[in-house]
Image 1 (cartoon, rainbow, N blue to C red):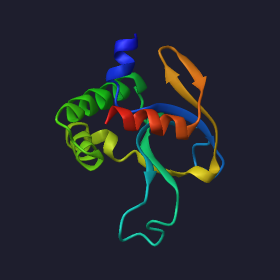
Image 2: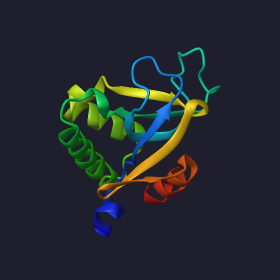
Image 3: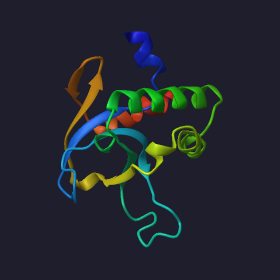
Image 4: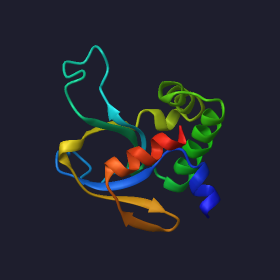
Length: 135
């Protein structure tokens, strides 16, 4: 089990999101803990966002999680950055590409991380530090 935790590149978290439109409790594979936005957006660089794939919208969560992890693991072996990893996941798993979301960290509460079969309380800053050590 510890071997899988070492190789897993993307964190799998769930949290309560107060600024929701449709999903108040998303389960997200996190791609970027500090996402500035895109240059053409009005709020570029002004918000503190989390970027990831919301697996609640996908019918088979286990399959989606496994596919994203496999592609991300392979991309990390090639020393790809986050943008390249996103492009690879989008190319190899196109049905998941439209489910990428950004979440404002100010509205995130009660974060939990999936470790093994259990969800454990966590802090996004600790996850970010641990994730940076992997890259």
